[in-house]
Image (tube, rainbow, N blue to C red; front, side, top):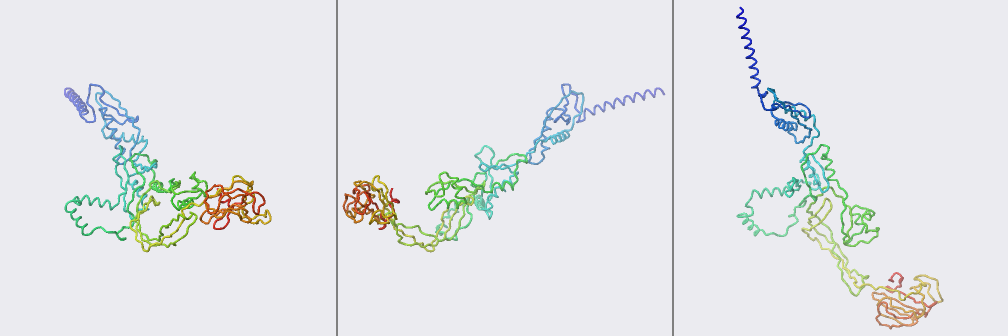
Length: 527
């Protein structure tokens, strides 16, 4: 009995030893446990932001797992997620130890990163128009923004916005252009018909041109409407990653880009312009126009053809330039025809023919920047009935100028009604008087021809000089006459000496200017 018991004990102890050895062997052969290594650290505890996320058997695995965790946290979206990620690895030398599965460590790392997110950046697009920039959430929003700027001009939606890479730039910059559907169709046809300009096609083109030569186009041959459309400013688009608060809602961006704002521009004065006309045509007040231009003092300031003025023009952030073919009918007038007459002064003109308006049909190509017309080209014009021009004969000779006939003197009697200075004198003075000593030199006020020189009753000794165009000057109360009738005299030439002859209240010179036979106030004509 004792022998049986001892044998049983030995068998039981052997079984326990075998079991322990089997367990130890299985531990070493299981994938989550490391083998015994005699050289240095052979198991590594990984910490992310101070949190233990698992154990690995090499140091480099921790770095690779962190990259995988970042990708997992970001998901499939286009956001760029920024999170704190302080990675620490502690090594140990052990006889045996258990390591964690790769996916387990990655999941734990992703969880820690989510808890430590600093900022999520969205894949975005920055649109730059001159000095203006706006950030949008997607390329689709960029296209919608640019399309909004052309909607009011492209009613039939014939143009599309095209974003292309700018090959001249080092960075990835997209530029925006407008492409018509017609142009796109032509490009497709050119790609599919490589032989369109050579071989049989070229021969056929020559045959058709010979049979049906190009002639003058009729009004019905023109396609009325929009012919070209393009952005008037350079548009640049750059891809970027931005936070949500840096993005502008599409509706707000559209309002910013398409809303008209006042922009200063230079306007060149043309024939027929006035300050009031320029102000009205550009929706300005006279006061605002004067305020913007230092060269204008007031509403009566003179402006000349070619002068440049600063005006304000309403313009959106993104301007659009376009051309339209337009058919219209209008009444028109011919330009005035002038017949120059060298014998007449410039103050004389006579209408030789009265005008009458004509009528015409027109097809014109009109260029616009936004809603402001910048040019007009007549493509076809047909006169329904001809206008009759106004014909004016005009003088080209400058009218005479007048100078004071004496040096010095005192103005003693003006032009017009007055008290009778002496018996026999007129109460309506037809000239002006300067009191001056007898013998003062009297000069011709203007060049002309002497038509009378002698005694003139109430004038005493008097001289009449004709200056042409019905103009005449008279010099009275002279003491001595130095010229004779028919003599040509020049302005400033000495013609007489002053005196006190005729009906006179004292030594003086009486001076008159007559235009068309009637006396005028000489003071208004003297230089």
